[in-house]
Image (cartoon, rainbow over all chains, first blue to last red):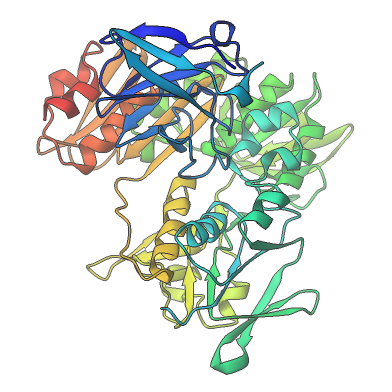
Length: 112
Length: 413
C-alpha cells in the first residue's frame, strides 16, 4: 500500500503547465510530473522514455504532453506514447484533489 | 483500400517505422513487414550527437525491441537489401530481396532514404576518408577521433557542424573547412548561422573558408590539400557534402523520376504514380497542389509525417494536417530548434539573450510569423509552430522582447 502525498495546492499549477515532484519526495524510480490541463490534474513519470528530458518542461495541449527535446507526445491520462522517437509509454500515478490539496498516490509498480 | 491485407515497407528509418507503427495502431489487421538493409531499424539523428560521443550501441538506437515489434505483429527483416519490385501473385506485387527471398504485398511503401554524397575530390576513396550516414560510419569516424588526433571535417552544414562538436567532445583537434563564409546562412539566415558558426572557433576548432581539393596518404594518416593551396596533415577526413539519391529499387518499377533528380514523386498522401506503391521520407519529392515538385525537406520530422500520411492513406482516412516543417540540431551542449522558413520574403526579428548571442530569431511576413528558431528555448519554437500554423498575427516588438512568452501570444489570440 503506497502512501498518498500532498504535492501542491490547487492554483499553484497553471493551465497547461506542470510541476516536478522529486523522486526523493515520492519514493519512486523517477521524478513525477504533475500536470494541470483541461480542468484536471494528472501525474506521470517525468523522464521521457527516449532520452534524458524533463517532460514537465514540455508543451501541454489537448491532453498530450510533448517532450521538450524531440517532441514525442504522451497521453497525460494513461501515459501512452503518441509518436516516435520514444516508443515506450511512461508510467502514470493516481491523483485526486481534496479541498485545496492535490494528492498523488505513487504507482506501486514504480516505487524505488 | 479495404482489399489491402499485406504491406511491405522497404526501409526501417523514421519514415518506414512510423508507417508500420501507425498502420498497426490505426487498426490495420493484415501483415506488416519492414525490410531494412542495415542490421536493425534505428534512429539516425543520434549518430552525430550524444550517441556518437558516448559510443552508443546499435541496440540503444533502435526504435523498438524485437519483443515490441512482435507484440505489434510487425515483422522485421534486417540486414538484407530489397533489390527489385516485381509482379506478384493475384495481380499484386512482390518485393525481391538480395538473398533471393521474395515477399508478396498488396501495398508497398518505399522509405529507402538517401545516401551521403560521396567525396568528389582526388583521394576521396582512401580508407581514412569517410562520410557519416549510418551506424558503421559513426563507429569508423569515432575510432579516428582519439584525443590528440587531428580530423579535417569538410562541410559545415548540419551534419558537419554536429560532428565537429562531437569530435571536440572526444578530445580531437578539428579543422573545419567550408567554402562559404557563413555556412548555413541560406537556410538559417546570416544572424543565426553566423552565431552558430562562431561556436566552432569559440570551442577551439580551426575554421577555414575553403574546400578540400585533394587528399593523399601522409606519414600518419593523410595530407589534405585545400583549394587555397594550404596543406594540412591529419589523421582522417570526414565529409559532409549533402545527400545523394539511391534510385536503384525505385527504378525497377519506373519510379526514379528524372524530373525529381531520380527521387520518387509523391502526392500529399504519399501515393506514387504506380498503383499500390507509396513512398515516404528522404527518397521522395512532393507534388504540391499547384503541380510543382518540391524536394523533401530532408529532416527527421518531415520523414515521420510522411510515414504518418502514408499510413493514414492506406487505412483509408484523410491526410493528417502537416504544419510548418520542424527540426532540431544539437552542438556544444546547445539545443537548437527551427520551424518554418527563416529566409526569403519578410523581415528578420532577433530576440537577443545577450549582445551577439541570439536566443531566438523569427521571420515575419505581412504581419504573420513564417519561421522561428531558438537556442536552448524549445518552448518558444513549439509555440511559434502553432502561431505559424494557426496564422496568428504577431507584433515584431513582442517577438524581439525576451520578456514575452510566445505561448501567451498564442493564448491571447
